[in-house]
Amino acid sequence: MEILRRYLETSPTRFDAYVALQCALMRRYVSRGGTTEEFCERLAPVYHRRYAPVLLDNR
Image 1 (cartoon, helix red, strand yellow):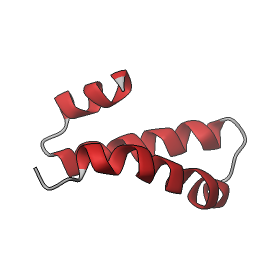
Image 2 (cartoon, one colour; image 1 turned 60 degrees about the vertical axis):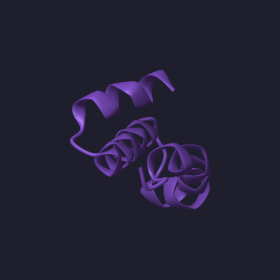
Image 3 (cartoon, one colour; image 1 turned 135 degrees about the vertical axis):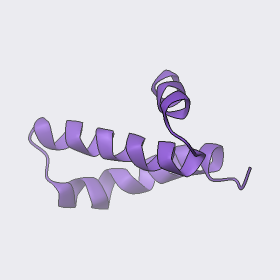
């Protein structure tokens, strides 16, 4: 959750932090040899389960 704190501090809204963090994680995954399709199929749902309740709970 430490990485999340960084994005919350630099993003104007919680939704922006959610999207920015997801994009950064996808870029990292792709740079290590994964594909965007694999990320969307395998990791995006896990990301959503972990971070959506924290960032998108309508605060």
